[in-house]
Amino acid sequence: MTRIVDRLEAWTLLALGLAAGIVLPHPVTTLLWTAAARAFERAGDDGMTARLTSATKFGGRISARLHGDTLGHMRFA
Image 1 (cartoon, rainbow, N blue to C red):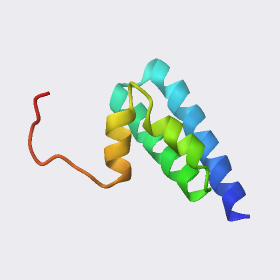
Image 2: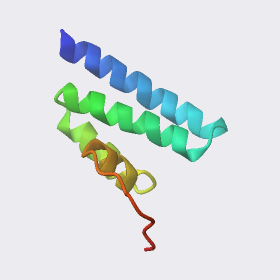
Image 3: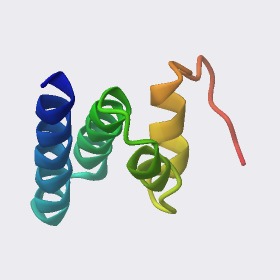
Image 4: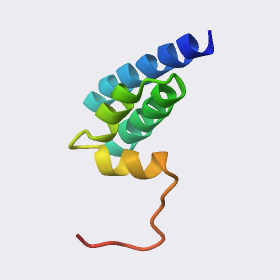
């Protein structure tokens, strides 16, 4: 039952992230996509988690947040 709730939450967050991308700034959509990826991970959907974390536009930031990595300094790349 919890997997169903997690999957529903994940799809809802993903839809909100897609809709928010039209009117809200990039950091907001990144937060929503990160939350969606975490919910998909809790639901056991490794395929969808991999798709979200490998997205060209959001991949690095989402992947870092999922693993708890934060940058304590500015990085120029």
